[in-house]
Image 1 (cartoon, helix red, strand yellow):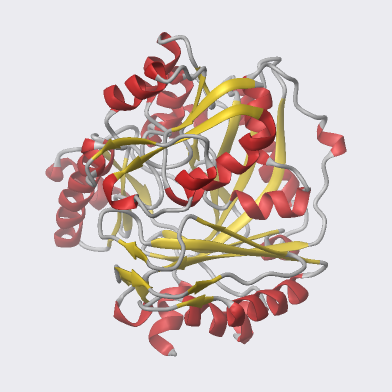
Image 2: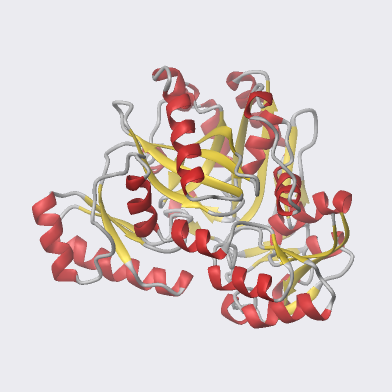
Length: 449
């Protein structure tokens, strides 16, 4: 499909993309940085190139350096993975101006849907329900306080750019709001180069549901059903599953949300992989919160229930092929994914970088591990501390929980603290088994147990 593809990323997502590219692309080349010299993903590829020092601003966010590597090595395509430059319109434009194919949407659509404030306004125009909030960015503290007092607390302060739960704070009083404004502006500037923020009504005890969408160059848009991502800490996902347990409580909700996601994507003339993220209130109302214009971390659960390879679908769409018909797509069984982090749940989920001494992945029917590490390897403080994504698939949710419990028992990660034991306890928890949780539930559960 392509002669040579640069994976402008690192870790497990680089390894995962390379594995699909081995079937479809002549040569595959991930980028790497100095602290990742013992990582597995460069070993999987045909070539690997050093982008720079450990700090992301000097390596994986260095557009000029990454573009130069791609050009010097004769690449005709670039896959951004997730995070880093994956939702950077300037990078997309530079790749395409240089005559290469960017595996993802256009720069214009990425800028529109990647800016959360702009995306909210666009969703409203498209008739998709959004969480009530500010009309555009509010970057002045006094103006934010005035808005919150007229609108009512609690409010959620959110960075306009980026995703992954970065730059989000709940404020229930003026003092907390001023502090949240400062923190979210600082985090937005640091992580995404954009200090803009906006305010939303804070919906108490919501479920987090997302719809995987795909668009092609022929005007077709399909959805690949939903994922539930309500088990979170610090607004960041820890467990994802499909189908979403909450759907059993509200007949017709899946179809309404999927149609809203497709309608919004069509209105944006969206191409390639994207995810429309919603929250669902305890009463079953759903609201658009943002669109991620890239492949999601949790895409394996969708692959497990649909039987599709989403990276392959990305490549085919980028090459101009048409998408399959919606009527040909179905969910089968149940999939659960646990993100295994080097972090300590008992210390407010603080990262625990360190040296991995022993590393043995579980195997067996319905078990999948996406990882970019191995034994005798360091989890550094320079990047996200995720070690692996452990995903399982079975005929039912109860069977998937049992399979996940067994896989977690068999997963050996020695030498540093991880959240593996927490995941193992969750699989036996009665409330989790009943699907009775919300986005703030995990942090409450950890404190109580």
